[in-house]
Image (cartoon, rainbow, N blue to C red; front, side):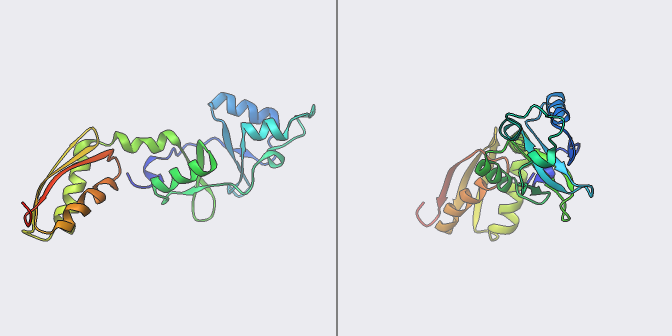
Length: 197
């Protein structure tokens, strides 16, 4: 799991531009969402209406049936694409204090939504999947044949690297690379350089 496409929700609740406040609140309560994307007639994400938008922008009006999503929505919308990395989506959410992001295709059409909870799914990745990816990465791409013996153990997302390497730089690089693999929580290492062993 590396991109938003791997974890996003494909079934999405959205609003039309002319949706009145009553319908917006009703949809939020029914589905339990604090924000909803607003779509243009072409299905593109035109904006997002949040509970905060409702409280601030609709404040003081008694004619909630005349106020629409188009008037309330925040524009331009902050969105992710299916190819956005999980880390990239997390940065967007953290920067804007968002709980959810609409996911759009290359034409800006809504294809899903990704939430903070969706991004946390990477930490549920099976240990064996993580170990297999590390073996593939280390043994077939990074470690020249015969230059190291590295044993990989993963438990609850914590990677243990143990073994001997000829190049001392490799002992520093391998743990850093392991930390970048989705699902890795921490890395412990007992890699020894043969030059100093």
